[in-house]
Image (cartoon, rainbow, N blue to C red; front, side, top):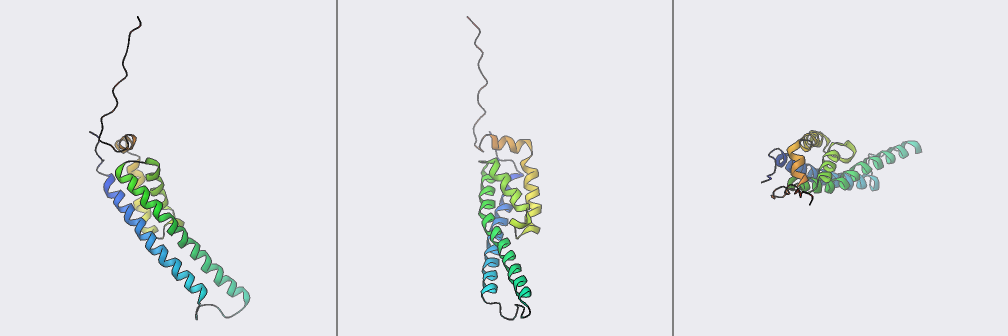
Length: 150
């Protein structure tokens, strides 16, 4: 029978956790960034127009990075679940790569090693075979039959 390779389960679970942290921290960053743009308080520069423009531009870039993290988090979680069950090799690889990219992962220091570990695990032959059979517990197809010409 085709069982899940032992090295696949821990890395898939860690990718799910990384995706959840990305979603939580990304949402917190988006809300915080929007609040700082709307109500800058004493943080906004009171000098020239160029200083104010630089402040708002920096806030918007930070907001964009957090937003990308929020958008990528469900993809990381979805791909990690696909990895756990062996149902889609491409989604699993996409989740691993997104966890590595700094602009799509606000938990980059956690996501990068886990994403690299996932890519290493996904390239092992027994893991590829697990995905090739859609993670199911079914035997391989029977060999082709030879019929001699009559």
